[in-house]
Amino acid sequence: MSSERQYAQAARAWPFEEARKLVERYKDAPPAKGYVLFETGYGPSGLPHIGTFGEVVRTTMVRRAFQRLSDIPTRLFAFSDDMDGLRKVPTNVPKQDMLAEHLGKPLTKVPDPFGEYESFGHHNNAMLRRFLDSFGFEYEFQSSTELYAAGRFDAALLEVLKHYAKIMEVMLPSLREERAATYSPFLPISEKTGRVLQVPVTKYDLTAGTITYQDEDGSEVETPVTGGRCKLQWKPDWGMRWHALGVDYEMSGKDLIPSVELGGKICRILGSPPPEGFNYELFLDEKGQKISKSKGNGLSVEEWLAYAPPESLSLFMYQKPRAAKRLYFDVIPRAVDDYITFNAKFDQENPAQRLENPVWHIHNGQPPKVTSDLSYGILLNLASVANAEEKAQLWGFITRYRPEATPETAPFLDKLVGYAINYYRDFVKPTKKYRAPTELERKALGELLTYLETAPAEATGEDMQTQVYEIGKAHPFPELRAWFKALYEVLLGQDQGPRFGSFIELYGRQETAALIRKALASPTGLAAE
Image (tube, rainbow, N blue to C red):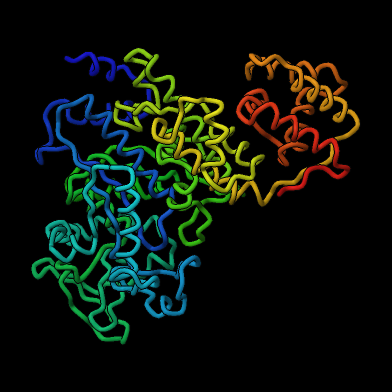
């Protein structure tokens, strides 16, 4: 047994805890299909949001952990339920009236409101795949439409028909009385209108493999359940899919626990054990409301990646998956700086500690060494005080602070500079609000100005931080935090900021002194340029 496997067997990181469930599942013999199958599900009824993609990130982390614990091959299916009928028009897409005309049709039969793809389902599938590809995930995309039409589910659908009564016994107690009166696990697709119909099944024929239902025009229609002529309601569909594909692991949101239980019962009725998995907490928006694809109140992948590297998003997904977390623009800087911190620790850790480090799970055990001793937060503040619009403006300060650093020798730092400028432009600059210093603050700022003008040349950022701290203690601020808050509000136009000594070292003593002089000379405070 390799030393890494020994460490992995004892690792406490949650992906290893999850992976050990699968080791136990196949402790006696490997699966007959020859591999362990991980699955993530996606409902492409609206534009994808990060909560959807979190499943793929986290499932991949469990898959990688399992690969350290077992020699059984693995596969990951990213399954899109794109045969589902369009139930309502998302509010964050164009051509609302056009989409309303196609309500009820499978998503892969609804025209793309963006005019880019074969259908709305194809458009949203492409967005999902673009995200997965941007992270370099190893996955196999699976389309519900394609698998139904190709007959991949035919045998399982006939099993559902065979066990129709038992499945109804499972489903009916979970439904409201009105819904239960017309419920059927099968949703026929009307040959006349193309819509996915939620209509009662009047009879079913096991020998013929058909159901009979009443079409929208009142006519009675008999149709095979195979060949893509019907699909299943989503909960029976979930259980059927687990059985048909042999899914071994799938996680889902906490709100789907009852659905997981129903799907598991149906999977057992069809003759297969349900997959392992766990239920993660939901993401919330900045107001504490659940993120919704139709509302579009979460971040899109493209939005996150405009302001931060993809590694930071993976870290956000890794941390505390069972805790509800707010997912909005303000969390991005912290996620970036946390990633830099964990990355810096990795080389100094022993093999067992590395398995507990998030960057191990983000990079499959081989995190790249990022060259950046500057935090994203301090770059944001530098961009703010310099009103930076281009990378060259920030690099002018950085090379003075770290002469050996260049965009070529520190590519990760160069990316951070670009992200910081984007974030400053879109979120910091519009909210900057300077104020004039109070008399107490003027005295303290004057003392800081004198120090900067007379400090020895060899004074470090830490030395200057200590002096800033001492100046604050020497004046009657109600608490030391009020002094630092004053520095940020008066000099940076915001209510929080970096370690000020580090900021002075990066921005420059002369430049910081000039900033203080300007603030002291203005009766109304600095104005954003």
